[in-house]
Amino acid sequence: MITIIHSVTIVTLNRNNDIFEGYVTIKNNTFEKTGEGSPTDIEIEQADKVIDGKRKWLLPGFINTHGHLGSALLRGAGDDMPLMTWLKQVMWPNESRFDRETVLQAAQVAMIEMIKSGTTTFLDMYHLHMKETAKLVIDKGLRAVLGRGMIGLCPAHEQEDKLAESVSLFETFNGAGDGRLSIVLAPHAPYTCPPTFLKRVAETAEKYRMMIHTHVSETRGEVEEHIKTYGKRPVSHLDELGVFNGPVLAAHAVHVNEEEIEILKNRGAAISHNPASNLKLGSGVAPVPDFLEKGITVSLGTDSTASNNNLDMFEEARLSALIHKGTRENPEVTSAKDTLEMATLKGAEALSLENLGKIERDFKADFILVEPGQAHLTPWNKDRILSHLVYAARGSDVTDTFIDGKAVYSDRQLLLFDEEKIVFEANQLAKKFL
Ligand SMILES: [Zn+2]
Image (cartoon, rainbow, N blue to C red):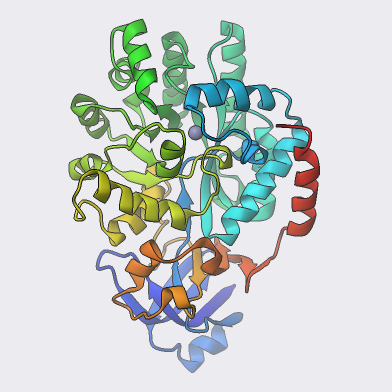
């Protein structure tokens, strides 16, 4: 299957950061060619499908590296609370009453929101019905990294059950959906997973060569508590327990000191920076300029709709670009290009996904089209596109989303979801909860 999309401005995010007017040729699920100008008559003839890009911008799809899809129906259920109060009073009591239908309905609401705002790959850490979520990802054409969220505040046999469930998810679904699905180990956090359990997680990760994804040092209070209980800071402790022996993606990393940043760097850990969630829960601002200066891979995540409260990666990127300039009183600490990379190819790097996050030959054809003919993106020329994408654009500017070479959203029409039905049913279900 060969598809050509012509008459587009291509934002490649390649090494030279090329931006040009031209066309892309997609063979099955990968880019076969990116070319300036127009395709030749022969190229058009050989294509199975030819799409007029209508002078839109074509760029890599966003990669959202941290979220919890299953809790999407708790959007707006508990604002203006600190993390621990919010978890204990809102999240955990409601989630304990979630059934299969609620989790899957929530996951679909989140998937629709992500596709419509240009996200093509997402990471989901959740503890309920992950096999069903995996099947949904396969059916609905998305690319995802899933981890069965594990809280270790339970007897050892229950910890082992959770680990076994994670391994079973890995054995059944890793690489499924033509390689669109990856499975990771997802211990919730150092404050919810005792050291003995984290050691077991590290051993399991090594045995099955799985990546670990976990929340790390999200709030000042949890770090202080950790020091009181164990006499050491969380990142140093995780290192001692062997958690960093393989690839790790740490969500948040807001309260890490210089020594811990050094450990993260030396161990090759990546960060999922979630600025909106960190601000909303009053957790703080992660030292992203320091991570970038050290060469640590920093990606972007929204966290769940319960602490954001949307999954719009344009908004996350803009917030990330602005907040560090403000807190450091220095507009040079982040750029539009760095930020856009964090939302795309650095996300792929953080999730250990190869050939993803750029518009380049042999890269996976995960991309979006953005409609530039709107007042809030005017005026534009190719020198201003990166700036507009980070500082002016929004999720609703996306008109088309392609994943693995296939359209899942075309001319603002969802091809695999009945949005009206899902939204109606989700609203009915949500009445049972806060
Ligand atoms: Zn989270």
